[in-house]
Length: 109
Image 1 (cartoon, helix red, strand yellow):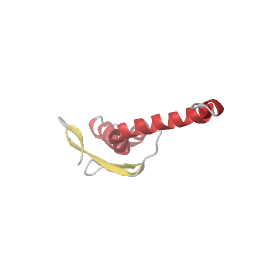
Image 2 (cartoon, helix red, strand yellow; image 1 turned 135 degrees about the horizontal axis):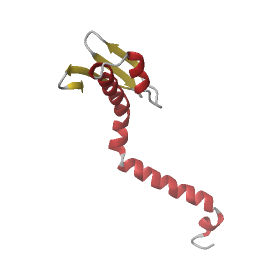
Image 3 (cartoon, rainbow, N blue to C red; image 1 turned 180 degrees about the vertical axis):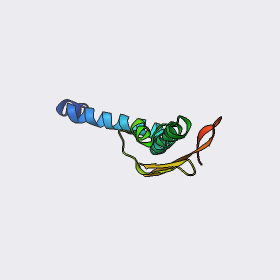
Image 4 (tube, rainbow, N blue to C red; image 1 turned 135 degrees about the vertical axis):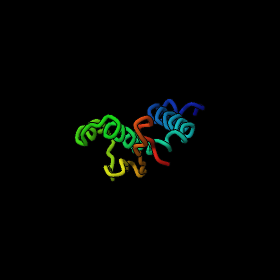
């Protein structure tokens, strides 16, 4: 049997194995960015909603439609008295608070 017998007999399996190895390499190389992704969803939603609601003074209904994501969010809390918005999504939670007219909204650590 030749050295390349497996490749000739199973070209689809070989291609899938190569693609899997390439995918694993890419995931490993981008692991820091991929790990941060869940925070991006809730942080973006909290900050944009806060800006829409308290900087631009739009209605709550309008702002909820404005920040609607394809990926679902959970634990959405709009505390109008403190002008603080907390949003959870993909296992992470972030808050944004209105700081003032000149500063707008800021993500909370």
